[in-house]
Each structure stands twice: as C-alpha cells, then as structure tokens.
Image (cartoon, rainbow, N blue to C red; front, side, top):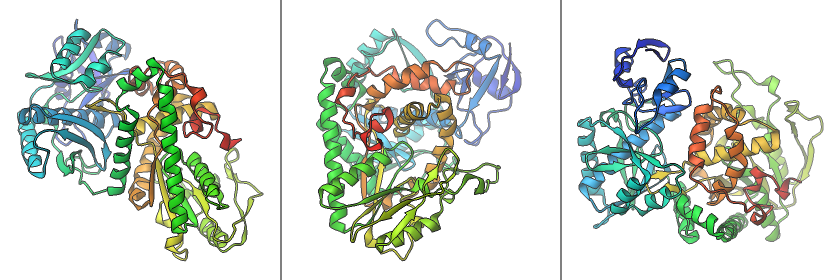
Length: 566
C-alpha cells in the first residue's frame, strides 16, 4: 500500500509498523528536534509501534483511517505541541516505573507545570529526600538505556478496574467508572501497567534528555530545553509561583475536589452547588486580601497582568470594588487602549505582525499618561477602536484623586518597560493572574492550565464575537508563543499572585463548548486538536448550575452575564 510520510512516498507491507516505515524513508533522525515520536493520521494520533494498514481486534483501526487520509501521515516531533506531550507522557511512564522498582508502595501525584518541567509529589516512607533523587535518576537512566519497547494494550473496562483496584489506585478506579466506553487502552512493560491520556514514544530509548530536581516535598521532572531539546531544561526556583499552586492544592483539599471523579460525583449528587458557592467565596476572600495589601503598600499604579483568558478584566474590576470598600476611589484603564494603529505596525522577518508583542503598544504615551495621572493631572487617555483597528478620535478623560490607585489591566503589565524609572518603585503594585488549575483526571494524569484557558477562550470568542472554534485554535499557537516571550519571564516579579481557576468550571464550560466541537469535521486542519479536547471533556459530567454562578464570577467573563461589562 502506498503511504506518504511527511509527503515522502513509501510502500507499506502487511505486518510493518510505522517505525519500520519511518526508518526505511530515512526519517529516523538522531537529534530530538528532528526525530519522529508519533504519527498523526487524519484526526487520530498513533504510536509508531502501530501497523498502519492492518486492523486489530483489540486496538485502533488504522487501516480505515489511513485510507480516508489518502495514505498521508504526518510525523510528530518535539517541536510540535502534540509531540511534546508524547515525550512528556513517555518520560513520566519511565519515572513511575523507576519509582515502583525502587519503592513499590510509593504513591505519586502528578501536579502541575513548574518552569521547564512537571512538579509531582511522592508519598513514601521514609519521606523523599535529595539522596533519593540521585537513585531515582540512575534507575530512570537504566530503563532508558535498555530501550524497552512500549506496546499499547487494550483491556476490557472491568479488567482495568480490577487491576487498578488490586494496585490500590482508587483514583483510577473512580475515574474509569465514568468512562463511556467498554474498553481501556494502556501501556504495559513487564508487570508494570499504567494509563496516560494519549500516545507514547515507541520505546524508552527515545528519552535522550531529562533531569530530576528535588523541590521539597516533591520533585520536578525536567523536560528537554525548548531551544536545545537534546539537553534538559534547567530548573530555576520560582517561590512565588510555587506558592500559589500550593495554595490551590489547599483549596482542593478544602473543597474535597482534587480529581474529575470527585467533581463528577458532586455533579451527580447535586453537591456541586455548594462547591460553586465555597469556591467563589475563596476567590472573594483572596481579592479582598490583595486589596488590603495594595492599600497597606500605598500602591498607586496597580498593574494586573496575566496570559490570555486568565480573567484579567474581571480581576481588575473586582479589585476596584474591594478598594472602594477600603475607602479608596480608584480609576481603571486597559493597556489594550494603548495599541498602535494596526496600519502603523511593522511586520516581522516572516512578513507577519506579532500582535502579542509589547511593541504593538504605545509604551511612551502610556508612561507619559501614567506620570501625569499620578501627579493629579486631568488626562485624556486613548480609546482603541477594534472595529477600525485604529485609535478613536475622542479619548476618555481621567482625573485621579490624591493618593488614589489607578488599576491598569493588560498582558504586558509586569514588563519592566511599562513603568518609567521616574515613577517611584514603591508606588507600583503588580498582580499576576492566571488559571492555574490543580484539578487532575487522576493522580497520574494532570490537566494542563493552558487547556483550561483554551476552553475559556473558545467559549468567549464564540459567545462575544461569533468566532468559530477553528478561528480560536488558529490563533492559539501565536498566543502561546507570545506568552513564553512576553509574559511568563516576568511572573516572579509580581507582588501578588491570584489563581483564577475554578475547580467546577470544566463541568460548566462543557455545556457551552461541546456542541461547537462536534461541528468540526474531519476536513478541518484543527480536527485532531478538537478530537483531543472532546476526548478530554468526555470524562466530565455537565453541570447545570448557572443560577449559582455570581454575576461577578471569573467564569462570567467567558460564558456571559458578567455585570461589570454592562
């Protein structure tokens, strides 16, 4: 059968795996940047150990998919987001295997991204220590050097539940009870079996770059460096960022909701309504605490920043309200109004305009206005018209009272370039907001914070702009690149962090986004990404609790009904 691997023709015989064909086509490069890790065929991702032209009784049916795709197969590498996820899953599998070999009774909880890696806790006796990391890394390396094949295996759902019950992994047992299908795909190596949300590399030998860092009380599994993937990323201590995640972990315990199974059970019993109320109260208390800190510092320029769909606008408005409660009379502006007219922006080396860059803002005008406002002058601040992509002829006049704060919201709020050296440092208070979810599918399968933000953005773009799911997804890679360059490097400079994630929100967002996702067909270039989101959302029960969600909730910024914007 004639196939095309990255447009290179190759003849496939029955019984041959994708990996065999990759090698025959001369595509099995050594460097991680060029080495294929998995394959995308139409809307599905396949391990390179699968046979593309032979269906099996207990696994995926690739022959039909290959035929429908016209024999065209895209190879995924570390440079692709999907390729990075394949590498991460494989490395995590090896790490869990090594942990099991060293400390069979240990329990691992994979938590969240931290720097260039993933933070996880290890529950064992005696407690994890620095010396353990050396042993663990050596065991991982021996598994990698053995180049063990990673073969996908399909189990009956009952068999899978029985296995994990025997292993004491009740989190997986509870999750599988919500699975809509009668089978369960996992990976086995000897007597070690585990499940990850997606495919892995063909063998353990593909993991050429990794490192482990002890971060009390757990560890960070370091992924390859983004610029040089043949070397491991370097962990830099981020105490403020780690602290907000630790606070979110405590919230999860307080809310009795750490996993999707627990959330689903609350939806089923109706106790999700109490979850909504308590979760929203925690948010309210945190906003009040930040407002107290601003007043105590004497902050005048309150910079509210964060990545896309983090809830910056609602956060700025809620801080405005709490500052009013404290007797202040603040004003509020958005950095979006300082955009330079689109026709005046210069394209980059690729002939494109990077709308995520700080250079799209009139930084000089902002600094001039900020200085005058803090000095008590009446200032006409600009208003940007997004329909014309130009600054409106008439601006908005603002007069700031003596010692009153000005709340400034925008993605570049933490960038040092936004604040002139002439403005006293003590008068600036920086707030970083982001949806840093700590809800997991189960103890070994985390939910990425970027996935929740993407869900939020898809819903908001459709609800407020009539944009399709595909339109939002077409912009998302550019948004993420901008965040890596312009936002994340400055997050540790914040004076206060606020996690805008709501543990119940995926169950609400599903009601809005699921029908839109189902409308995307196989002909769409975003079908694979959409299919992945659908598979993810299939684990959630929908929650019909909109009447419980306050009109000032972060979630209202995305699903509508936020009274701040009337």
